[in-house]
Image (cartoon, rainbow over the protein chains, first blue to last red):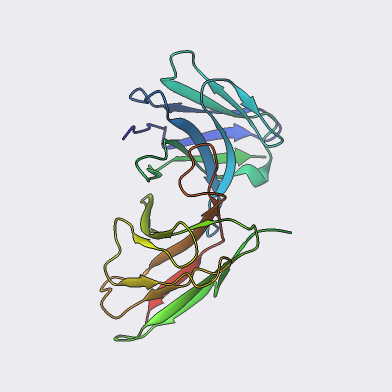
Length: 110
Length: 115
């Protein structure tokens, strides 16, 4: 199963872009990259996912490198409500597992 | 609004007691899942269900039981055999079972503590 590596914590100023990196150097060809976030005492919230191409939705953008060994989640204009733990997960479905690491604790500061 | 509802938000269990955590979804999803989250750890899979009347053990099923009599409902029972039940329990669902291009969506969890 492919594993992911994320920095344990990051800070971002309110209104600025938050760029959260994720390393998944052992990802295989059929594995998707997923991002979730979890605000304290709540369930994980789905943000975005992608396979090869960059993706954008109303919450964030996902940039995947050409070799697919790393990705970056971009929150374009971070707000205080974006303070949460962000999880990067690689997922193929055939192993029937979402492998959750410890994530990145993002603090958005006023 | 469609979503996943877990209840209660907080639950306390006495020694030797079984307790049941509720999970209801109105997303018309076939698949449902139960996870356990302990402080400083990632989520671990307890049980999952592909369709009604089906369920399978996950990685840490010992001391837990489930049922799936209705598509919308997937209750989890924490039995007295589970010796370390204090944790944050999360229910999730997805359109189909383990489809890699379909995300799992989560409820807001139940925090279980021992009295």
